[in-house]
Image (cartoon, rainbow, N blue to C red; front, side):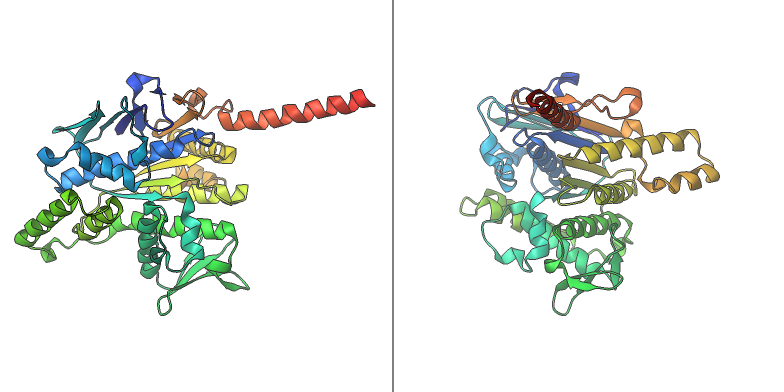
Length: 406
């Protein structure tokens, strides 16, 4: 399990107050909080630090050449390059490297005694609807850099589909016509362009097919005998990557894209799926279905991890259901029990209590705290449910006023 510590970075001020300030990046990690509280900031720091570890393992840059300029430039790719302060501290400990930034300097230390699963890392931005509504996202300028990367993976995923792919909502299917690069939503009695579909479909389709495609890469047959690049070619490639990283005339966005495109294909052993607002534009039952789909893909490999940011109390409620299902599986593992459970909750989407971390972010204090999990399940006493309680309180006040005015 990796862990991260964040202090005085963007909206995050005091950071996490427990366990020495370390946030565990668990099998399933969830961040909730108000707008501007730093949910996406933490998710982007996790994405960037996880990528740094991967790049160091892969040899994209040597340890001695990993300097502060390179470190900061990759945060710009996530549009958080301006979040650094003089008191900023960022610390990450994975299974291969310990990375620490403080007082304007970055240091790294190789960890020798832990097994490292080489990951495919995907940041799914909240702007993903663009991919559904605009055919050639990469031809547009000024969009978030993560959206261009996500758009490329969306096309890769669509090209990989043969025929139609069943979606987790509305008994609908996704179809991609390679001849004209056109996406469709297909139902029992309709077939429409994805660009003309509802906002819910435009949100869920790219999220689901990219997640499914990347999770599936772990199970593709690896042919080590037909390695594409010779040792000499790989040496030249690494040298070219180094030149790009240190060239001051290349913008950060272009540098990031070039490095990604030049990096050689690797045999992935883990899928790190970082998703902003999976509930986006979705009815509660559809939120449950996409969450189950993401949990199933995450459970597909023991090395996978899922990071979510959310504003939805339903997502927390449905995670509670997944945890309860996981506890039932631990206590009643027979075929009959599994079959009965599967009629209520997909067994493949069940999670264990110890696999889930939920953190609450406070936009006023800039702090991060644990969401209480009494008896192993997320507490109703959380920021999202408190908003519902406040709505009920206001309504009660209106009823009292109505009685008073009578």
